[in-house]
Image 1 (spheres, one colour):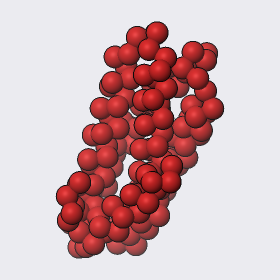
Image 2 (tube, helix red, strand yellow):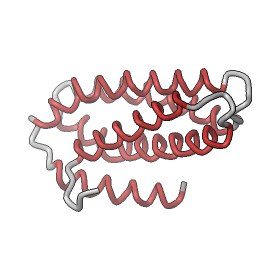
Image 3 (tube, one colour):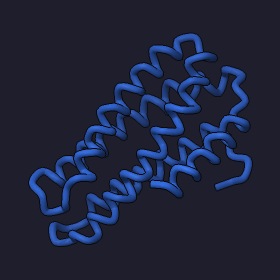
Length: 151
């Protein structure tokens, strides 16, 4: 991670990383229990850290600075809640549990939808907003590191 990465670059890098993990999961066969478990844990940890920095730091700034930011942030927050519900279910499951693969797939689809909306609707407005994206990115990177160290 770059020392001076702006907020949108940080979030976009997270989006790509998680997308790649979901793709890796899709490639795993039915017998890849250990690999599925490890990847599930990585996905959950990454998503928990990502949603936390968005909700604690990025979304409040967007809500305050962007004209229709409140509606965008409200929708994104609801999408986060749905994802967190699936994450919690997955954290309590084993790879050979019924519906495990389906839940990972649905979580990936929900995240893809959420990412598309953020990157196509929210991020362009944020870029034009005058927010100090470097300062925001630095704050988010520090908080993310704290979270990754404790999760």
